[in-house]
Image (tube, rainbow, N blue to C red; front, top):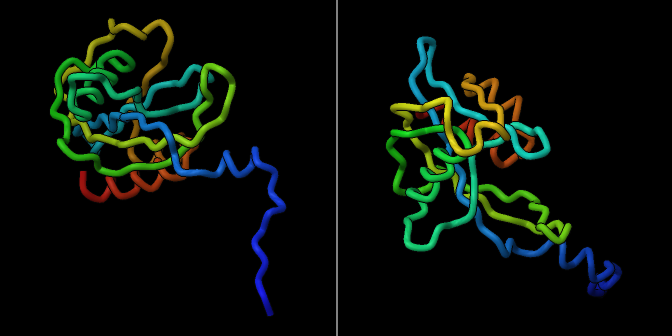
Length: 155
C-alpha cells in the first residue's frame, strides 16, 4: 500500500496550522495567601480571564517586559520575576487586521510584593486574586491550564 500526500486542505487551513510566528510574554503573578498561593487574573478586552501579557519590549529582558505588563494590566508595583519562563503555551491571537494567527506565550512567574488599585489599565480591566484551582477553571487556554496545574505543585 502506497501512502499519498494529503493535498486536500485548502491553503488557508495550511497557514492556520503552522508554527507560531508571534511571541508574547505573560506574567503569572502570585502571592502567598492565608490559605495558600493565590493567582492574579485580569480580564481581556473580550471579558475572558487571562494572565497579564504583552509583546516583548526592545531593550528589556523578557522577565522585565512581563513585569511591565503586570504593572500596566494588573497594578503590580513590586515583585520578583523568574529569569526563565515557568512554561509556554500556544494560543490563537487575533491581529488588528482580523487574522487569527498562532502565538506562543512565554509565562514568567512573578512573586508579588505590592499591587495598587490605580494603574494604567484599571479602567479597562477587572482583576481578581484566586486559588490556583479556581484559576484553572476560569481560564480558557488548555496550555495555560497545564502551566497553572504544574505551578500549583511548586508554589
